[in-house]
Length: 214
Image 1: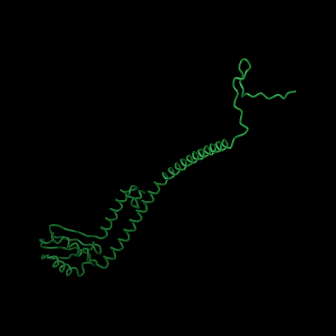
Image 2: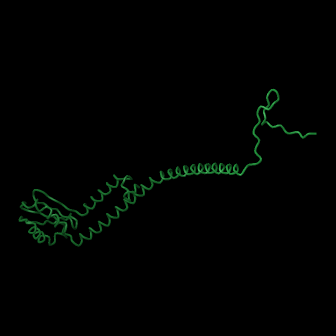
Image 3: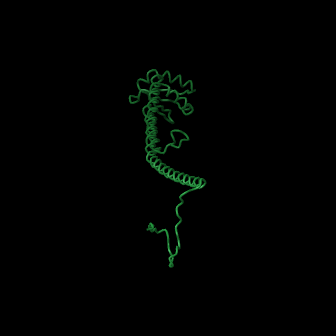
């Protein structure tokens, strides 16, 4: 008995029973050239698939990096602002310590500087009244007369003791105008101005590293 072949649906018959279509049979043998061509095609398809997968992974990684940066940048700006505030506070404290030491060693230096700056204003005043603390007032009359000669002031110089003045604070009254200096108030004004500048600057300051943009 002849061996029966299992019917497959890769063949179509026409009305007369003839074969209308038959799918191509898979090849059982290939030439070396065909093998090489198939290998090259498979390699190209695999390479393309690998590149597509790598591009997709790269896109996902970049999206994750962008999201992380979006979360980190506000915190970095906050930390940078805290660093600026801390640095400014430290610089202010150092400046205050230096100023205090300088005033302790040269308590009359601000008064001499004020007289030099106001030389033209007090030149025509008939009298110059200086108010100072008891500590500063000691020996101040002679020093002021010497300073008056230095700046060419020929009017009368009078020293008044003011119990309410700080150690190195003083007031100048020359009739048409007046001036005052108090190291404590001056330091407080600097502190207030610095605090206002930092508050106005907020988190939108210039980069800590010029040109970094961060």
